[in-house]
Image (cartoon, rainbow, N blue to C red; front, side):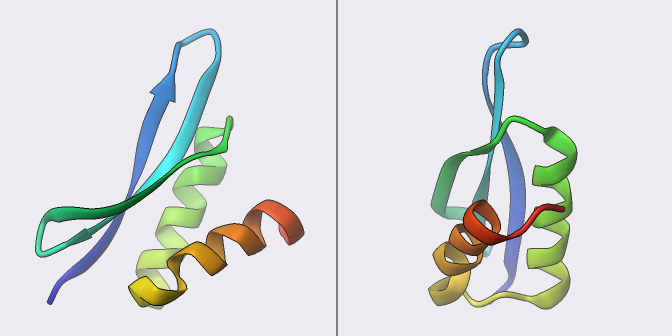
Length: 72
């Protein structure tokens, strides 16, 4: 089972928003939209999720921690 997290882009060029999707075996399983309006932060968080191989059951917890406690 191959886990991969990817940054997704939402919103408009004037008002961007970025989220993260979890892919398992190349198929989307879960998406958390609207995490940040800074692409660099979303990309850094996506890279961290992939590097640490975060299990799907912890995906929402990591995002919640990022949104409430951390700044990348």
